[in-house]
Image 1 (spheres, rainbow, N blue to C red):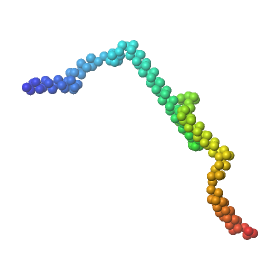
Image 2 (spheres, rainbow, N blue to C red):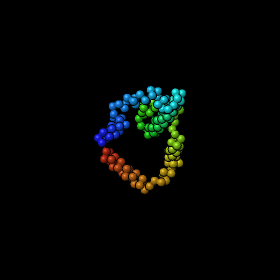
Image 3 (cartoon, helix red, strand yellow):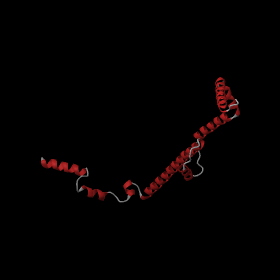
Image 4 (cartoon, rainbow, N blue to C red):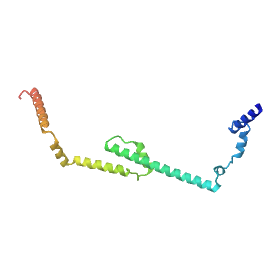
Length: 160
């Protein structure tokens, strides 16, 4: 009975790869050619590797393009809000090429913002803002300022 248990356990341990003799057989059974390991012919494997490299290059190019678009957006926002420029963003734009621009949806948003700013800067917009102002508050503020200036002038000048 002990013999039976020992043989069953030793076989299970060898199957798990913990036995001493089983490792040598595994090294001999694995082929040294990666194409054979993948179950392909040499030509199929080379074509597969070439395809993988092309796909990686496409992904890298798309990633660089997205990074450049984000950098372009950051540059635009820095110009808009008069913040200091970053050389890192400019380098990313140059690496991707000078044909980088804002994505279409962001361009629409920027155009809308520019139109709103132009409307605010126009004379008609200023006239509309004057109509919306509280004239009584402005009159009170002007009178208070005038009174303060008059009192300051009286204190400095003996003729007044």
